[in-house]
Figure (cartoon, rainbow, N blue to C red):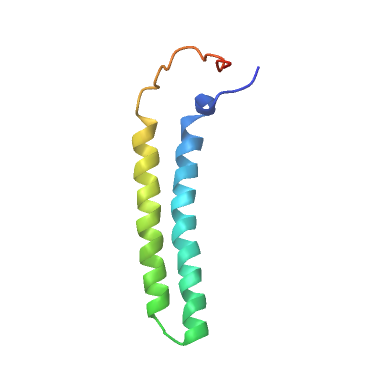
Length: 84
């Protein structure tokens, strides 16, 4: 039997959200570090990259954690497409 999306342990799902948060910050910080090295803009590329990573990571963290507590929406049975 195939598993549904929400069948896994909740701690695994929430730890994945934390890893995504850290990855967003690290990825944008590394991009900012690269910009600093290419155009000699130390430390502004790193700072701006880290801030953008935090904003994106927080957006994703809030979106995922609010979605985790919403009840599932019952849309009824699926209907086959009608033929013209």
